[in-house]
Amino acid sequence: MRFDVGNMTCDHCVRAITRAIRMIDSRAEVNVNLAAGSVEVAGLVTSAEAIAAMAAAGYPALQRQDSPGNPG
Image (cartoon, rainbow, N blue to C red; front, side, top):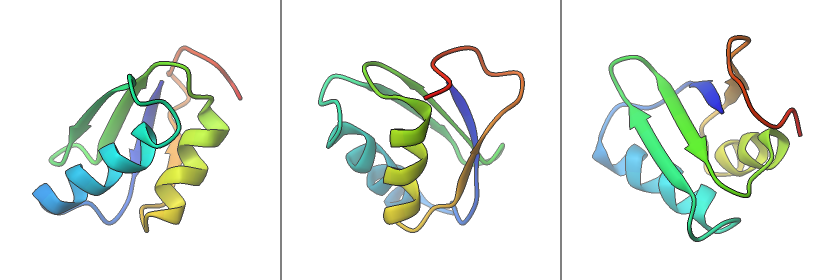
């Protein structure tokens, strides 16, 4: 699943988002692209769970329309 994510500017953001997703699924693969403002998540996480986790960490997220995966 791919998400457009706001407020990401540094390595701290990468760690915070990764930690938030991995609290749901410790084995999730999380790839953050600061330049593109996007996050890609693979694992046992629904899109709704990922969006809620990122929002709770302070990073508003929207699933990309071209994103395959669980609509959650």
